[in-house]
Structures are given as structure tokens and as C-alpha cells.
Image (tube, rainbow, N blue to C red; front, side):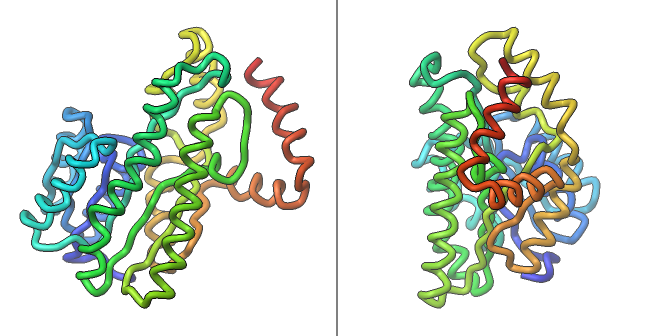
Length: 272
């Protein structure tokens, strides 16, 4: 997919962060936008900004963990716009605590949104992407879908699942000759509210982690959006965002199993 003018783009988690940045970038490129989030206020602001740019945009309240709601959402979007050509499964959350301290309900919360949302969104919209004759699917994983650190077991489980699911699906669609491109996105430290909105083992730990994340997050959401769009245009299977994502991905390849020792040492200094 090289051009976006007139295309119908569907973006979940569009109320802030990467989702909003993508919506506004695509609006400037002439796309039509079907935007969703559970944050109605943030979503309305994204729609307002997109319309001010001149795009046709509509907001939908959507819990991506609710499979029936996502399936109904796909039908509603196609009813409103006539088609769906680009789908970005972006909605995501995290929970930070050791696994021994993690409430299983928090683990399920992360899995149901971060992986379940990708699964549900793909299942709901893939037939429409195929029918479009030139569709594109983008699933947001993470740098933490490529490497691991302590106190992120739920997030790692979800983001590794997104990566495996998306890479396998891309292979299937290419072998079967379906006209749908697929990219898996791995952002590094992006200046968004994901850590501020996370569930933490204690409020104190959450505050210290948010402070540390704000200090190291080196890529803005608009810059991340531009990288994703460039990756779509190039039909990249894997889209890494930020110098940290590129550097750590290379370092992991070089160190092999010793990389776990490296991340453990760094984590002890930063988080414990």
C-alpha cells in the first residue's frame, strides 16, 4: 500500500499516543478514519483534530477484548464507510509486578487487550481486507516482543504472542495469494501514557517506573507514526521504532543467551 488518499483506515486505541498520531498523519495523507477507544474523551479529541485537518473521521467506543463487540464493529465500519482497507490493531495496556505478586486478573487484563484485541480485530476485519483487493494489516507488538526484562511477564506473554501470530499470518496470506500486506510493529521507548495508565504492584513502584520511563523514552508518537507508515509503504514484515529498539535487537542477536544476563543486570540497577 503506497498511497492513503481515500483509503479507509481503522485504528484501535486512537484516543492517545501512537493511535492518535497515526490517525492524524493519515488524515493529512487524505485517508478516511474509523477510530475506536474506550477513552471517549480522548477519542473525541482525536476525531476533532482529524476533522480540523479535513479528514472524514468517526469515533466508536470499543473494548477490543470483547470479541462480539469487535465483530459487530467491523460490520458497523463497513456499513458506515463501505469498506475497510487498512487496519491497525494498536490498543494496548501493561501491568508491572513480579509474577509472584501479579493478580491473575491483571494478567488476563493484559492478555485480553494486548493479544486478544489483535486476535479479535484481525478475525473481524481480515475478510474485508481481502475483499478490498489491496488491504493492509498492522499489529502492534513491542520491543518487549523481541526481548525480555523482569516484572513484565504479562506484557511479554502478550507481545510475543502478537509477534508469533502476526508473522505466521503474513506467511499464510502470502502463500495463499491473498492481497493483504501484514506488518508487526515493535516500538521501543515511545513518549505515550502506557506506563502512567498501567497497573502496578504498588503506587510507589508505579511512580518510580513512570519517572524512569519518561527519562528514557526517546521517540515521539508522531515520529513512531511516520515510521509505521513508511513500513507499510515498503511492506515491511517487521517494523522497529526508535534507536533503542534497533540497538537492543542487534545486541540480543550478538549476545545470544548472554543477553538475559545483560538485561537482568540493568534491571537490578533500574527497578529494584
